[in-house]
Figure 1 (tube, one colour):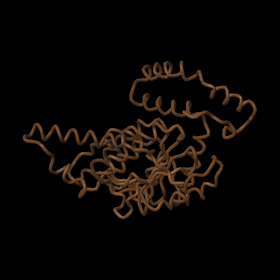
Figure 2 (cartoon, rainbow, N blue to C red; figure 1 turned 45 degrees about the vertical axis):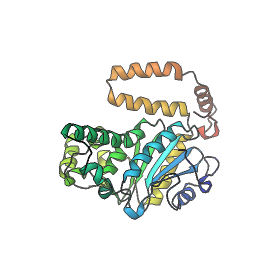
Figure 3 (cartoon, helix red, strand yellow; figure 1 turned 30 degrees about the vertical axis):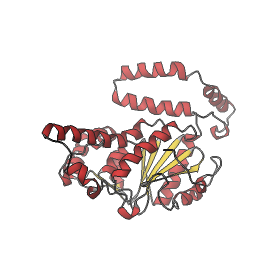
Figure 4 (cartoon, rainbow, N blue to C red; figure 1 turned 90 degrees about the vertical axis):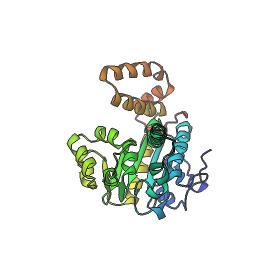
Length: 308
């Protein structure tokens, strides 16, 4: 399955008015074939915009979504044109979380002849769903997620796998799983404690399922910026993506890989890893180009870096 970008979203070069690009992004008119739940576009040549596109269902995550996310991000990871991803939701809110009606058969009626076989199949199903968001983290391109309105349940699992989180003033977040009788199992309980500094706050949110509003999300570190509305936020996300895309992809993607490795390993192990990484990655023309640009006081957006 290959990504197909609508020509309506292709605008040459990084130097585009971000608000104009946002207006183009918001007029997708539905999912991008072959996907049925995702709209994929290129507001700028080096930036890919992925949008959950089920607004009539409040962007609920149905069976197709869980599979299409893996296909989409595996392809983005291999796309040498793309340097940054912006992820958002269509319609009035980011996502209402898992589509309980659409997923009921997998969750409530797993296959198997006995307890052992049923359990084995449930484990396999959960592992498949976990990959839906882990694939974002595994993608070497930085992923900026832009949240407006509600971000419930699986939405929190999704955003904690992203690299940069932005939201609107009306956004709110909810770890909803305890309210439907289960422990969150596709990433929130593992990633949220590493995102938010306060373990007590993480426990409170996970045990009570209370809503976390934008200002508190900013103060605790769940998001790094809060915008007055969705259009302003998307323009800000594109501007940030453009800044990242203007830099060496060798440097940016190497930085993401090492940030994630460092999060999950000791400082000595992470130092050894970056040592081994850079013994080859320092042998790039990008280093000389960036240094020369700095000496000549040039903007990096004027420098052409090879695809990666």
